[in-house]
Image (cartoon, rainbow, N blue to C red; front, side, top):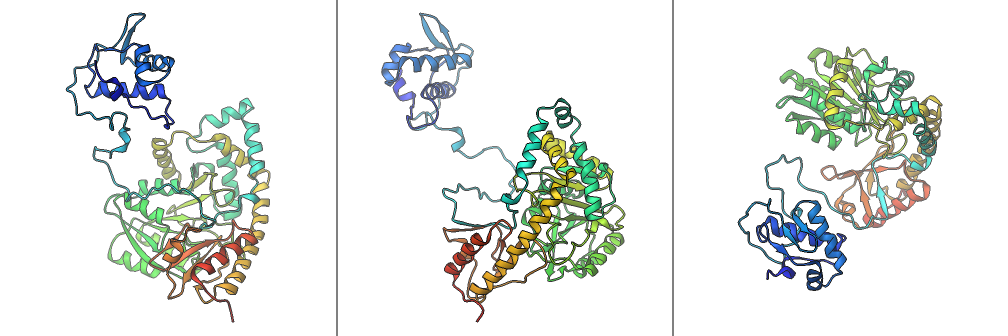
Length: 485
């Protein structure tokens, strides 16, 4: 008799039900040619005794195998491997590998490599997490948004509006967003010029895929938003870096590149550059727009936190100028409401948006029309404006409090410039302190670190005063430091 007790592997600690483990063991053995077609299997009673399980467990396992056509069952007579199973040459079999998951081995067919594998499980979250500039969800009108969302799922016309004709984004949101962007950012647009996306990152990806061909050049700042750089690199384009100083992107370096080689696009974050948070000066904005017209390159303008400028009104985006259709404007509601609210938008001439819709449908055929329409209603009611006014005042206060804490506890350890806007401060460690001290500490996690510049982003908007104080004191404990004498 075949040693079924060795062929069938049972792990009683596994989350997989025992009957299914038995079925999987049979399937593996049949697939490997260990058990041949037409082979009669033990009776449910005999196999249950052999494996020391309840007879009903074996009945369930055989039923599973029969439902998948691996075996045929003749009531009161026998259970046998299906005759339709091809004759397979037996493979080397071992008890250890009998119930091994196929996913424990590496993927064999050739495939593209995006980045070096860095996925790792986090067993325990550290006590302090410094994000790179998230909003405080506790201040956001999430309850109001969800209340509107729920109301839309119970109305017939709302269901229809949320599930049909939304490839470009819900009509209601695009109409209200066109008016909102015109009022707040000076964009002279209509609903046809807007594509709603799952966050700014999708907008960057779509723009890159439509614009860039292998070998073409795109210019970015140094340092830059890493995920945007990786998106551009994946197109096969050549990414050229220019410096970023206290006045933003050094546009004279862009001009030098244009004089020596053609560039297809430039990626710029003029309002609060990521990660350093500096603002592109008016002179450089004008120069960049002039270069775009002169050399015919596109400008991808990422305006991720437009509303949070404290000392004055925010600078109008490049997209509000007379750019003759050269600017692709990207924004998101993640920095206004909650990082988990994945609603972003792209603004561009209609022929570009049309192709963006076509490409987006290849990777994402559905949208959350209920959430988009709920957000539109939140904007229409004026709740978003009220929230921004409240949050802006709160974040301004938190920025100043963080400044006080840094001067009190870490003046000898860090350098920074307190800028007039944004949701984070860019801190550079003074020598002899090194950023690795912070990166390896078990109680601390930092979302954006630059080892080359020995610097990191301290997102203050999501922390109240007590949390800011705890974070600064932990930094002081790790790297040491003294305040202003």
